[in-house]
Length: 242
Image (cartoon, rainbow, N blue to C red; front, side, top):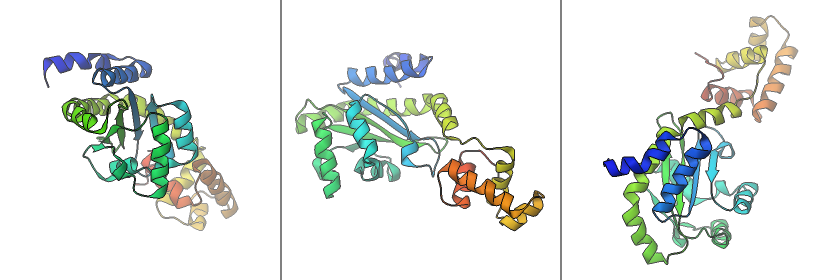
């Protein structure tokens, strides 16, 4: 990494709060010819796409429409980043299904026609994407521009992963449901494979009480089964089933 690049990165590395940190990312991208940026990261495996940490300069109305329509579940850039590490340059060809083509047409209306997406795979199993957009260049010119800018974008992506940990930690804490001590115990024993009857004997209470706690746990995690709640709780570090 050259000294010039380190100097360029200094606002990102020295940012003292989240706003200054993301502003540094957008300023660097803008300096390299990309006027819109989106960062989306899941802090742990198994979480819903809707639980991603997202920071973006995309139009607010597009972000709202994207979330309300659940477009993350059909977006080819999302599926690419889930299984690949290589950058993905946007083109009409990657939007193959009718819903994807409709999404792309809608995105274009918001100035999101030409972009490049870099998958994010972090050291703590974070997963997501960092997207850079420039909608002012014709197709061939944009591809040439990406060829020149890509080494800087990849280095920036890696530094974003490293410097995001504090902000991701805050986001993760916000995702963790608040459990009572008894709910935590019930969930811990569920993760260890114990039945309702067994948990009731371990905790010296009735099965009805265990089922009451399990109902509250399912509601807090937004899932339909105690097993799913136990899996998510383990991934978030709420319980240690060992």
